Image (cartoon, rainbow, N blue to C red):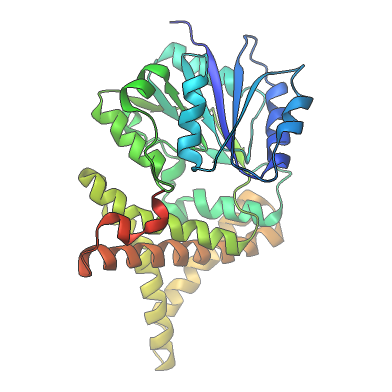
Length: 332
């Protein structure tokens, strides 16, 4: 089938990011035409002047709407898009020049109504951005789940870099009205509707993520808080691995406590683990500063996700709260 791509980008107060992303779209080696739909989600610092600069180089539709969250903004973009296949990106990504070519080749060889892919750190990123990327993608920290195809037809979509056909969007109504985990929720809606997804390894993006550890902690706390709710919404999604960050945090507290009484074996385990983080991140980032920041980013991620996860579990299972009262920020 002939695939006509519409690239959907929600943005909220990030005009500088949009400019970098549009530059990378100008440099695409993809020979066919494609459109870009930018949805300004009630921003006060808008990117309309930025998009105007690219109107003579790219086919851009710009829509300003009231603030309702990224998921609903993506839905609005897909409703007005002209293509039959939507590529959804976050505003804080940069594309390698062959990004669209890789997607088109993969879908023409093995068509699926949805796809997802991975993210990497660009050489221009700051040391802290590279460290956060390591913490989010390394096998030693997340098991590489975000960048691992797993069962190819059951790859969980991530909204910073994913695709969905117009047919699948119309059948599932797109993203649910929630602020966190909406992409994972959509994955299960897609599979339940009989569609398949695939992991396109070569269609990666450079993802800037958060710029400091405070923002990173808040982000991972929200991820952890959302996961028990997603498990309640989709029973088959619950896995023991989602408990690992919480167990890591509890284990670290126990290790410190035991050390006060002269029992250091647990502490040695954590010391060895962080040394391994130091070595592997140095090999990947190739920066002394970056590898030491990775040793900080890793526990920041575990503490954020772990505390968020335990809080939601306590509210759901012990206090018997409903899902909206468990984590109100998750829902509009």
